[in-house]
Length: 434
Image (cartoon, rainbow, N blue to C red; front, side, top):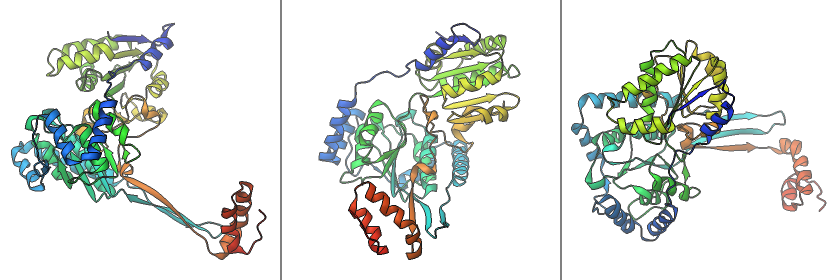
């Protein structure tokens, strides 16, 4: 049942805390199965991957036929609607342009002691992206995962995408082509994650894996972390809309439903300073649910996980937003900048009445792979930095080592690490007392 909260209620804090603690994901005991699959792929390579693909995706492939060539990717463009292809190109261009502006700069300077210090950024050498397959796959996710990797400078980008029963989405392949993916394999599930992490006879291992997937994929990413890097373990989608009563209720209703239609476990929350307006939005949601193509999914999400919170003024929304730490935050208010400046925890912020979250899913430019389940408190959306790492460097000459070296000797001796102390002292002709 839809939750309705009012900040003036005596039990508001208890109700709000219950909302924060509510569980939206089903517990699926898949870890043991995934562990066996990963071990099998490590042991038998291609043979295991192909067997699991046949078992789970009902697709009989060989080491040769699981490879999707660049020629096939390019040919898939002709299978797509030309207008949609143009939209895909526009999205790719905007995503590439935005992420290029987020590339980090290195650091190189000499301090007062004469020591040269700095840091340099380099891309991971190989990255893998997981794309859910079949008719429910999303070409926009291909662009959002692949383009930042290429902008970062990843030389070898590998995509795995299941094609259950041979079902392929040509737009996904077209997106891979436009994004510059180097290798594509029509495999999925835990076996695909294992192949990316440990390699097989056909698939060379990568350094990092990104992209969403089902419970088996999520469990596999957890399992291989450490062997490779991963982006995050994504949960159900979520949106929080802060709106005043100057918005058309139908607009806000559709924004809330844009996330509810993703998944029955998705969550949509409205915070407003007008109780009458809150009721208008609820009525608008009910009206819209009568015509949505995915109405059953959206209705279950809204009824089970949706919430409407009434505050006395919009400043009271700020601490509530920070506690929710939403994946998507819409600020449909007169002065969105004022609220933006006060908010700390949000995956991505959509400012103003004419900035629906959905535009960010496709063509705005910033990434739509964002932290869920309150993890925006400590993490960020996917970007070029996820495909890069920082190496620091330092360089002393004899004078600068003489300036700071004795302190290093002293600290090393205090820790009982004689070789540490001597490796510095020997260059400075200093006595070392063990």
